[in-house]
Length: 200
Image 1 (cartoon, rainbow, N blue to C red):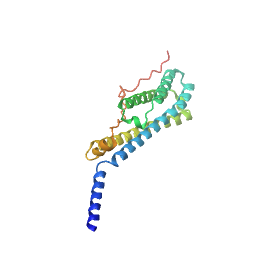
Image 2: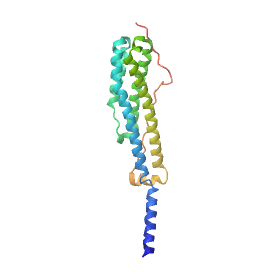
Image 3: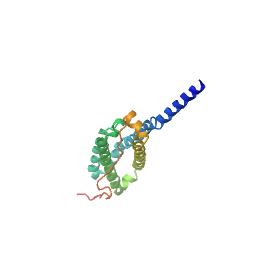
Image 4: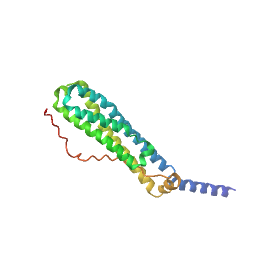
């Protein structure tokens, strides 16, 4: 009887070890980590989107000649907030590219707007503007960190579901699909924007 119990214990331990080595827990843990990191990315984009109306309000009062940039930023914000990516969409590369393109346009508009303000000392001396500019710069840094962390989590998840032995559990048990990393490629990003402050 004792020998039979020992044999059962060995079989149960072997089965448990085999299942543990097949990604039963590793795959969902990696997937949830990537989804959590995506939530951080969304939170930072939302923070930026919330700050933009304040920036536009301050700028409208002092930089009438920059109205076209302000309009562009407002329109880009509307487009960027109109595209929503849920955790279920993280495997849809086209949706991720569309989201990245909209966020990239918004970032470009903000960059041109902030660069143009360097020529307006009355705006720079406004404490509200300085505080808001600092918040936007901090947000852009947070976005960059959140995207880096998300892409690292996606890399870890995609590696997990493609490597042996985790690929067994990933494909047979979980039906896992690779997630799309966030890639914001902006054409001409290596060229600094030109600001023309001459009045026509």
